[in-house]
Length: 152
Image 1 (tube, rainbow, N blue to C red):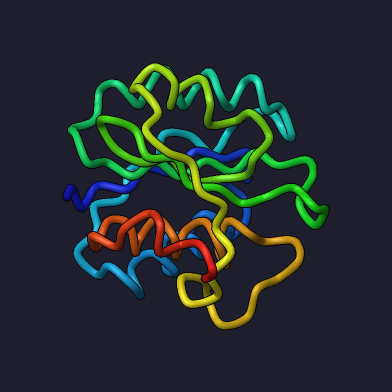
Image 2 (image 1 turned 90 degrees about the horizontal axis):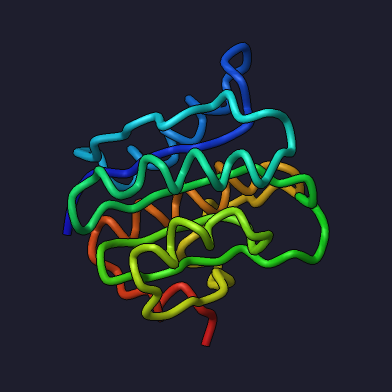
C-alpha cells in the first residue's frame, strides 16, 4: 500500500475545508503523504473535476488513494463510493466524478461506503468530504479491504 492520498475538490482556498479533510486523514493515517491535485475546480463542475483527476492520477504510484469531492448533490440520496482499480483507489460521490480516472486504471470493483465504522463519529449532511470520504481513504491507505467499507 502507498501512503499517498490525493485531494481534488471545488472547495477553493479561502476556507478551512481542505485542511479539515487533511486533519481527518491524518487522524487515521498520521504518516500519510497528502497531495493537493487542486481545490480550484469550478464550483459544482463535475466534468472539470473529472478531467483534473483523470489528468493527474496516472502520474502517481500504484496504491495511491485519490479522494475527489465536486458534489452539487451533497445532502441528497447520492451514494458515497470507493472504486478499486488495478493501480489504486478512488473515493468520492457517485456522480460521475471518479469514473474517467478509474476506468483508465481498469476498475476491479466498486463499493458503496456505508459502514459507520470507517466514517468520522459525527457525519454532517453537507460535508461528506471530511466525514466520509477522507476517513474511508485513510482506512484504505492503512490496508483496510474495500469490502469492509460496506455495512454487513
